[in-house]
Length: 118
Image (tube, rainbow, N blue to C red; front, side, top):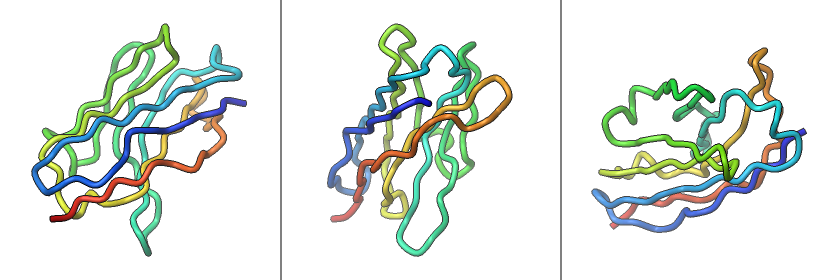
């Protein structure tokens, strides 16, 4: 299993920026893809962005052009730079990992709260 700890959330005004971090530990040698997900109140968890070990990225349409995912493989850490934040980005943000078989291998953590409000 892979343990994940998210950090970096907070309260920000519309148009502001935040950078989230997620540190992985445990069976990290099995990780192929790392990704960010979010869950807003009353809604299901949704994919925000993913990045493979080779650097390929995938973004939800709602965040394209505003969010950037990056990885530091040496630190087993994935980041999410969020710019031009909107109130609809308000959610608990989680990270997780997949192996090369696209199986989710991370233990869902507590996430980090992002609140976009004036």
